[in-house]
Image (tube, rainbow over all chains, first blue to last red; front, side):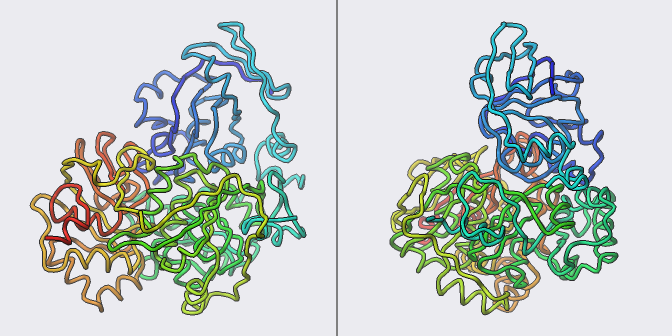
Length: 163
Length: 422
């Protein structure tokens, strides 16, 4: 799996309340959720995000609520992958379960700037910063998790009886 | 193989004699829960499987608590989806207006969880039941759907941080102050992916309300779960609430911990978490004049009877400061009724507070107490992120019921110790 896109960069502890505020949780419509994505942190996100863009963030991305609406909103807004120094554990599960690509790589986050063009090769565990020419190595997902991702999410993996 | 409490429960639920940290397992679940926000997404996912029924109609529960009584048409539609699904599936434990309460207060009260259980809930504060010696953790809606269909969930076996509690709390200091103190010390990712295991002779003086509150906020330190060693207080609660037969798992003496942190309860002071993270904690010697506009006493963290008693003790015979709106929310119908019988509701109303039906409403900025730009609230809730209780430029200060009540009297952040001296 390869993802290439323009980087939108955030800091530490981006919580699910700013990713998708609770006032919009009276719906589970993906497009509607995407139209409010990041609203309380960055009002410009929705207007500037383009299909394939990559979010980079610091520590503990997605902390707080268990709302799956958060990774859904990010995915539906067109973001191809989130690279963070670390993820809050429920967000991490949710992203894998719904098929939003994520990867933990602290050095890459430090080396990548807002607006850089970045390519992520998940199969080989390589993040390439096309803008600067830097490359970073990432750890592969455990096999169990790879099965979920390859099947396109947890429910599909169950349906295909892969466990 | 030496194991922590959490590892022992996960081993027992995955058919293993022992598990080791980092191992991925499939665990059998004793309870799968969701609420009116997360269940609709789970139901949609469940339908994708085309599987007829939930794995066990007694082990799936849905509780309508976040936006009920329905706050708007969309919320009404979401509740209707849950209600129709539970009727179709003959789900035994479906709780709606009239029977409902805030899920993490209601489920233990109804005896639906017991020591030794493995529980997932599509709500991050599902970690609350660790107070009963259960492994209990928050997940998303897809995990809930998978749990409803199969009765199983996948987990990475966590390492743990052990909190060895000694001493006794001083007057007007409670479980909320302990957990805020701990999060202030280790940070909002201080226990990321790990268990927080609470043990030590200090447990003797902690009520179940203190323990539920502490386990509830384990997620605010990033933890997978918080869990308390089972003692006579736990067993008494289990007996009083007709919970299922408990299984007690004690950590091995030589179990490995990432860290052991000693907490002397007698040194804990009334503690407040400043905006916009639960780790921004201060005690009153570090707090100047912070004027407030609203006080919220309630939530899955602090809406239990003991919490209302603590607030009422401080409010009794006093009045709320002018221009401070005080909202008290008993967590369940039962708590509401007991508070009424004890005369607490009269105390609150005479104080100048409103008393609401159980709801999560204001805690997550849903309804029933939304803040305007520039306003500040002292809340006994669990999160103070940007925009959590309303406008992105409003502020939430997390505190205990006693501190919230004291602040309501003066109209500024106030220690219960200060008010008690008046």
